[in-house]
Length: 140
Ligand code: SF4
Image (cartoon, rainbow, N blue to C red; front, side):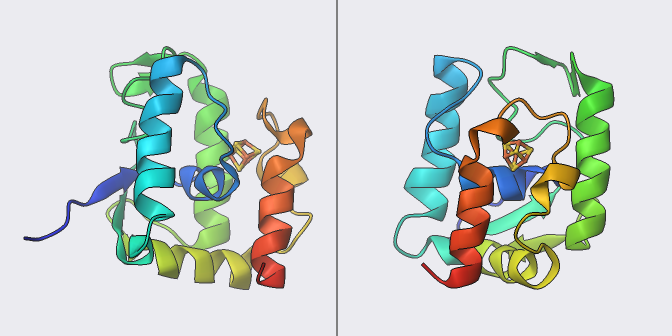
């Protein structure tokens, strides 16, 4: 059976790298855990195919801030997506595996760059995403 393809907006690749069980609601966190912990980080998860979208994606689906295919903080989210898409070389419709996504992060997103890339994100100051980025670069 062909594995399902996950849809991701550009900034959710790095969010998935740094995810530590925090989210905007219980439903949001449970859904993101299912995708990130039970799929991407599970054995064989590196082969998961992810298709890039310019609108709301599989992570956004149960988010309390989602309004159709948009977000209550659309301006901020669009800016985040634009910076992450440019950094990772992602376009609407690009399909890559999670392994390839991590290779691109290592190649194109140096440690310390989230202060700029993720400007405006409420989770940035926790430092979890920067730590995950540093760990990926160091191979731990
Ligand atoms: S700081 Fe925010 S936008 Fe950046 S990777 Fe973490 S959760 Fe995603």
